Image 1 (cartoon, one colour):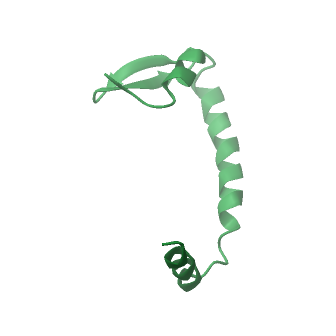
Image 2 (cartoon, rainbow, N blue to C red):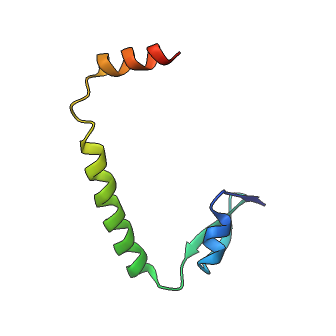
Image 3 (tube, rainbow, N blue to C red):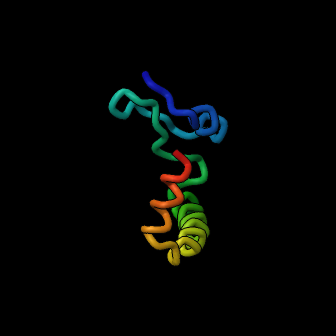
Length: 70
């Protein structure tokens, strides 16, 4: 069975692991689904805030910068 780079972290958190398409994946943590849901909402809010910082970047500027790195 394949394992992601996060497998040891899931196991350290005592996640219930299952075979999902040949991958060892977590389906539940001991704290329960409500706590997991709230943690995801909190982290998503942080991620969404970070993403807004890129709203002012124009595609032309982005492509120019990317091509300059090649």
